[in-house]
Image (tube, rainbow, N blue to C red; front, side, top):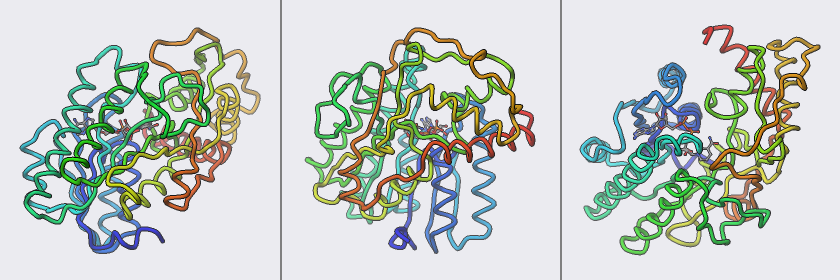
Length: 353
Ligand SMILES: NC(=O)c1ccc[n+]([C@@H]2O[C@H](COP(=O)([O-])OP(=O)(O)OC[C@H]3O[C@@H](n4cnc5c(N)ncnc54)[C@H](O)[C@@H]3O)[C@@H](O)[C@H]2O)c1
């Protein structure tokens, strides 16, 4: 088990009620011994907060059978006072920063939300960590979420962290790239150790309703049509949540390997066309009983033009991560979407949401 060295540690996880954060907390509560886990999240209503509450309820249930201490704090990373108080109280050794205003399209509507949560919020996290380092406290390393969107419309596949990433096509991407540069400067100035992970389209159970696979499942089940942008000519490196978690926990446990501040892709290393992806999703929803076996997918698909901010294709170079942390994602979209569809079908049946 790669998380052994995290036993007994004091760990802050921001965005703990989010998709990746919620699953990470659940995994850590299941695996670690005697750790103190503090989750921070503002529980905003960007998507249905009931899902965030459900993830927290799951964490509370797991915590009652764990030797770890779990505490959830509702608050914003944009509030320095909240962060300072938490750092003073818990003297965190490891910080995992996942809180952010996510989503590419919404950054066109509400750029201010991205600057606040992603730029000011990230700066506050860095400052809180720096202050602890300056006081000689136990803080050791930061792991934070970046995004494949920083590659913009680059066609240099597989996308590599050694290539330039200075042509973002959305403000979301620009905020994530700025996080990486901020982290580099804090490493140079203060020796603050960090690893930024460029996640590539993470999907799975308890996922995000604003993302394609989830909203497509909702629309198909409701008998509505699904739009495939760029006339269906998009490709994505889809990363199953458990593969992403395996990557995050390895990085949490070891920190950067060679330099003070590092950046890695966290993708599957395989590119799938959106058409193949939705066909696989249809099959999974038929298997889970959410769609009838004679469901006609073609009549529910509308091909449409590309949306501003969207990129055409992504494919991660996953070699550097494998070399550093000894792991390459293994879940294919068939298995991953089946697990998503099973969860989705049960969730709908239980909650009616
Ligand atoms: N899921 C993906 O495919 C993907 C891809 C690339 C990058 N990312 C990044 O990974 C991280 C986690 O993503 P996710 O998919 O779990 O998204 P998510 O929206 O489910 O989780 C983010 C959480 O952060 C919280 N949050 C937002 N602003 C906050 C603030 N100011 N203070 C405290 N909490 C705040 C939200 O309430 C939410 O629960 C994000 O940084 C996201 O940008 C995700």
